Length: 540
Image: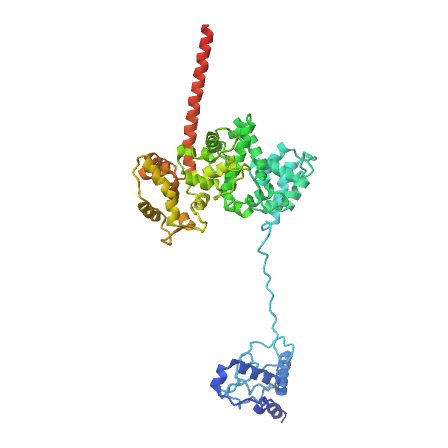
């Protein structure tokens, strides 16, 4: 009797739901209506009692025995009122299922544990701990590696209670820091903040280990060592201490120790070359990202390992410096360390046109650092000669593209190309050379570059072509234009002999041989004169 009353109380009175007339098909297509229906069903008193009874059975451990079949089937041995309402399954659903296909079917919940109220299910979500994956100073190594590093430091500082002097500290630079040896002085000064002349073990551990310097990659280490504490970039003066130490310690530069003025010029040239290739923004502020993207760190390590500095073609070659300085000195006739338009027009036996020289001195490709109006200083010349003699590099392409782009709209049009080629054509006619009409040259230029748009040439088109340098030579360098047209066999053999060399490397190699031969001839001439004078003195 009691069981029948319980079952009657669980019977769903449809009128209580106050449902509008609707078809089963529309129920399936109207999910919002189904959700409202489910919410109404949960709010009924009978539903509250049903859920409460179910929760109590679960808490008391009573097995829920259900029988298969329709809602009219019952199990007399079951204490649960749900036996006649649900089909057999592992866990009962939260909403009743009607055997007649009633639209009052809602989505099922898979569990009934941890119910905080009879109206909703609260499931405990397992919190997954995500390990730290970003470290500002690099991922810290295991503690055993840290202990090994400190043990090495203790060994190197053993017996030096007062600390290490600079000469003794160089072993720490190579063994612990593992940066180029010519960084010893810079690291020493970073640790010896009070300028005592000694670096103690505790101070070095604070700087290198506790400061997480040893966990950083070498590019970040070098950047941190060189830069000023309050800056986030490197300026040219930041490189001077390491270059001074390089000049003082490298065996390939010992011969310069008696000429400090050339030591300074060498250091300046190296810095200018670094900023030309790496500081792509051109603002004089070399960032960590630019340093990592460049090849300066590899070049520094190469310079530290190689005794012949001239084999370090990137940045540090003395022969390259010699060529740059001598080419500048040849043009600077009054030796005031400044050159003007008339000086530059004589470059490479008057190879350049007046129009391109005018664009250079209008400071379109790069603003001069010279303080004298209308004149180019040594740093400006370094940028020019690197751009002129290595037109395969991206800095060079950007330099000359700005010169040719008269209206600065980012594209080279037919009119701009013709403007610069007109002077070339006139020069060929004056030299009785076979002149090539602009229409033919224009087709040749577009065939070499293969631009995306046939109406103009953009910078990306030039960067994607291996013949871009010849485009500029055709427009304003007559000597290189003629060499390209005749396919100079000497240049072809040189390219095959050293395929890894850049255009700048080949040019510097040729010019150094020429300049050294001229100097030898001059020395021989001077020596002959001295010998002649001596013979005259003896005879008299």
